[in-house]
Image (cartoon, rainbow, N blue to C red):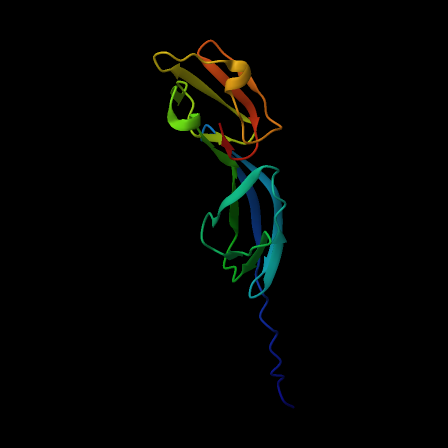
Amino acid sequence: IGVGNDVAPAQKQSYTITIKSQTIDENGTSELTEIDAKVIEEGTTDTYQIILLQNHTITDVRTQDGNINVQLDGNDLLTLSNATGNDTIIIVFTKDSYTVTLEVAGGVGGTLSFATGYSSKVYYGGTTSVVVTPASGYRFDFATGVALSNASLTATQTAQGFSVDNITSNLTI
């Protein structure tokens, strides 16, 4: 009578991969939120479709502990492979930003500058405020003196110039 040589196949290990989003706003403040979790079996590959936050861009995808390989393709699809332990994937979303360019028509008549606290970089839906400094012999006429490259925007007069709200694309003033 012989003794059986049956050997049970080795069990593949399963790991929990937590997926979190980190959103960074215009002040550099971030918020980390768990959005999903997947169980990945050792030696397998899986995918995860990222749903973009409106008016944000993915600026980084990283693992917290390095226990899984992560690759992001051009269609916001994550490929998860070679898991060796539980891990957390962090997808970083940064609010879209735009450039505001200031131009004085003909280059004469005065200067335009950003008011204190404002710059040429404006985040989606943001505001910029411009100081108008007329040259000697010139005056600023708000009614005819402001031209915006985006016709859907309007300027609002301020004590020192004007402001433009709800910027959603690059803008030349």
